[in-house]
Length: 365
Image (cartoon, rainbow, N blue to C red; front, top):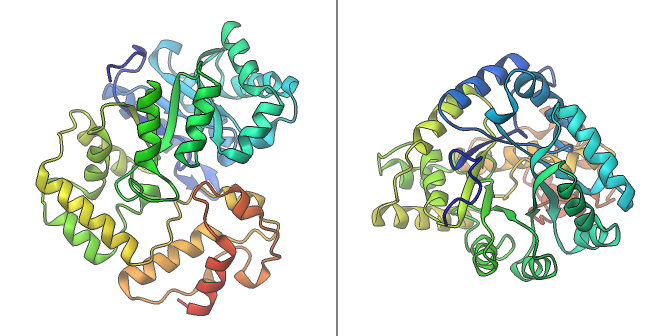
């Protein structure tokens, strides 16, 4: 698909959900350096949301990007998240607060965040879509879209009921491509059907397509054509409806590797495509917990159980065979769970978190 948004210079974007932190705070010095390098290499797309770092991501962008560069030097995407509005009037109030925190007068893209069957009903009840299109007419938003976490039939319904949607952000990578829960390919096909350009999140599945089992890694490494992350990015780039691929880069090394891939992404060869298919089969065969580390579950947990860290430890133990001690992880413990299910209700991966936590505790990894 031809890029219909000329303000986007290249197909690779800076996802601002996983920046480097020091003592729990975003490292502004490192973030500023990474932004400089990103822009110097011809990339200009930045993606944030108020829920990232509880508003800290937006403020970091003001301090490190928007206060340091002219407005036409970057494209900025923000999102309307479920927890920040309860009626139509709240939508503009939220948007105005986000604009102020980001230090801009308008957002290039504004997405209805994490849409699924349940959240969509809340957005409908509050006329959030209608309000977003009104705010576009008012000049506070250039383009209206959605980010999506549900099945293809739900996406088809949303796009049918809201034909004015301009872009769709999907979780899309080679292990989720045919997964029955995520339905990357099926959702992508729905976007093609409706003529909607696709923005991609989680191309390396929260780092799981870099930090992988030895068996899976050998399949990728023997190709000797680049880093593990590069193959994940190139898989996504091979899909013509994708106009943007986001990466949550936590350090300069990640950024430089990604930039080297995405300046001129090479199409996958048949050998490489077959290797990725085999790697995906290994991923699902090793019973990896498909957690991307977004940490939405931790934010709502009354016991502050570090769920993503526990799952990462479980996956690492399975990958390496080296036991991990869950008791050493900071925060609440598995035994502290009060079974409120807030974590499961907010999980974009639709994971059965409570049973998985109980299994982790029993396995004593």
